[in-house]
Amino acid sequence: MARNDIRPVVKLKSTAGTGYTYVTRKNRRNDPDRLHLRKYDPVARRHVVFREER
Image 1 (spheres, rainbow, N blue to C red):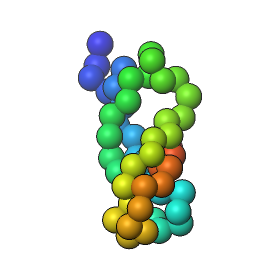
Image 2: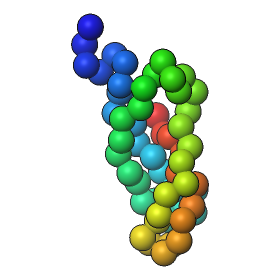
Image 3: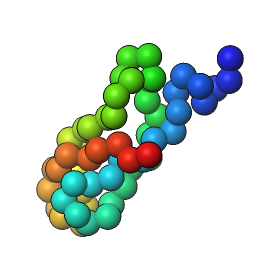
């Protein structure tokens, strides 16, 4: 089984509209739908929700 089948690389984009992104991996078996995490946005200088972008 290939490495990218189960844990693909995904981009998390800020919902604050700053254009800031994080790059991470996710487990498709545990999180089949789109990921959303609350992380720090240094451009907005606060914690905002980051959503997975395809």
